[in-house]
Image 1: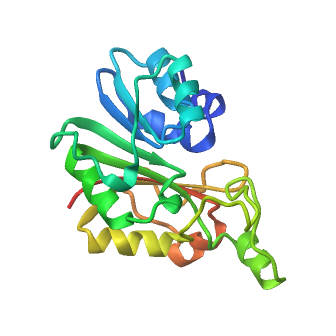
Image 2: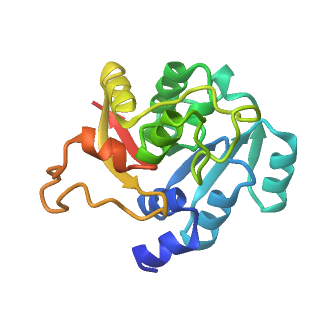
Length: 216
């Protein structure tokens, strides 16, 4: 399956995340929801060992029906049941903005995982800023909730997130920035990984960001 076919077969950030997972990898998906990502990995990758963590009982039952090994627990309590370096990838997709203990969760992820994968909606996307300027909280494909029923407790930007990575001594291994249609913004030259546009400019163009992190 090509990268384009992969992206089309999954949610936009799932397509990016799945492209980083190799055969025989061990994966932990935090806030796995109905287990769609893990179910796809089981189907399309060889010998994947994957577990999900989910607190919502209805979502957990859906994940079980999808054949996913899922543990019901609260991410805010950490990952104390998992040993250091026990996974190749620890994933937190579209969930970072919903947690309170942000730093602790990222520290726990890099403790138990060789790589950390995080996706989040970028509040500095120009349409989000435009909505605030005219007097309303933004509602979009990547921020789909109204202000009164949103699970989001954090509103972060690319600059905010990369600043936190520096503070926590996390190295950015890969960065894929997506527009509102889920298409990749061509922000770097694939040969030498030199970024063409300043991050300040990309901040306005990006609706959804997907990062792969490692220990610095």
